[in-house]
Image (cartoon, rainbow, N blue to C red; front, side, top):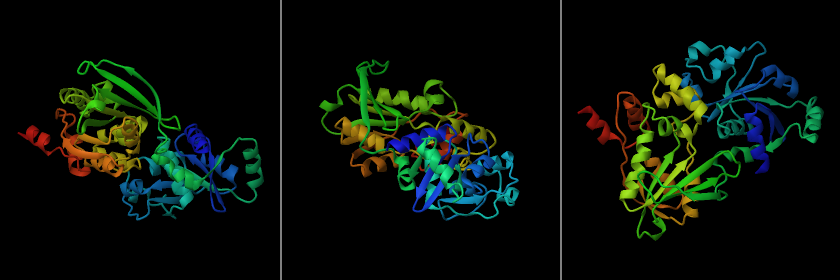
Length: 368
């Protein structure tokens, strides 16, 4: 676990790491923040490839059955070409010459993309196989701890965090405007990247029957700055008030900004939305799926709070399924709406029509 944690931080700092799968060793670096393809080629002794997700390639008009594909990079490729391949809004026709040689990614290359996603970077990786000629120099760097080598299978599992290893760190009473008897309980994931808060309202441990629960993914722009692009802040405040009115319960404030893609990528997606894309298509252009969130952490938090049966405040069926899969009984669901405005109507419509959120009632009332 320690090596995976260090690898994530090295990746975020723009440093390469080695992924080992069988007899193959790949030198892997994030496209975001990398110096140059030539530097990686010199260090590895072989020409790098770029690994892209199926979502990214589909956004460029490519049909791909594999979850990821590897693209050999020719020596004359420019930084602007790399940008076009990884994040630019483009069609396959405009990038056809760059996509020559595309093939399904191997297990090590897929693991490289998992590292990028866990590190909250653009899911595009530069990968180069370490040549026999360069192996001694690479081994020297490993001996000096200048490079880190990790197992590709372990890297492939890192996206889910470490289920069952969440740490309960601290807590304090925090009176809220809508719920004076509240306390915050902070949990930290083992890799230290994410901290989540359980807002315990009233005394749910004394409640008979299902505990009212809201699982709320952090939204800096909406929760803190009242952004008009979404209804997150209003949902957050309505959830606190509703839970208080129901006699108490729990709000899990999860560090999963932008449906799990992180704040930097969320802002990139907003810029793409300003160019005409909806929220789902914008995420796909960046290489992400419809929803990148992981809910095992919520199950661990509920387990730590001794809660196994809930009344869930949500419009998202995936949250219900995730809790049930984790062994938490969802006795019932209660809708939770914010206001529909001119600025967030397209966003909410995309969530309903393309991501299956149960928003028909509130969208229809806006239509009238």
